Length: 257
Image (cartoon, rainbow, N blue to C red; front, side, top):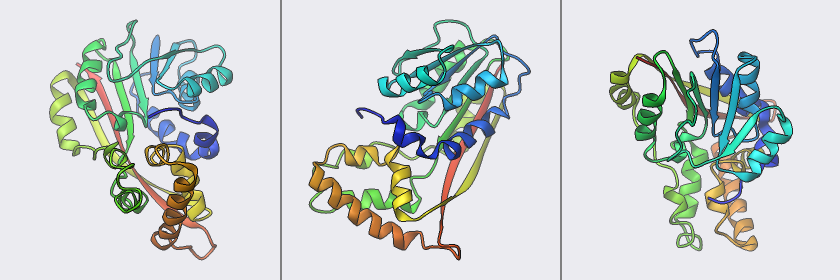
């Protein structure tokens, strides 16, 4: 995928930051000397780590130049680096590797997790949160519409840009041999949004990107009109006129043996 737009991503900054805050609260360390924020995006999760561990050396890592530019603007005292997390490994020893909503984009992220854990010292923590929402109407509808004419040919790759996450047992069996503690859980956030158009604005910043990028302006507009109409049916308005947007996320905290 090409450029990420921090302004779109940050339209729901509070909602997107809450899972990072919830994940960080479960990191079982009183202090760390160094932490890496993997897939740091515009720096919202990096700021949480810096606040939790004042005085630590915090390094943000992301593949998007646009996101890193925003992160550097927001946190001028933090170091950031551009890298592909599929192959990235920590340059310096660290006690915390933190990944908020990034590893779902890597089909081989279990291999990456094993490599990252192997790079940690004893007691070091790998803490990860990933959306587990491909079976939610928002994402099912993306794939269904993308498989229809006239979009099917251009959007064939988009339909497989993300793969379903493995079961928690798969993570446990792969990571437990390297760890003294592995904690895995799901949380479903029910975000309160203004309606179908608000859902589109949310997913434009993440899951909808692979579907929109290959399309021309007219095609994109037609795709979004179709998507909006179907979202309105899938997410009916509640009594106050808002919609509830359920969003399952998988959390993993692994402590190196």
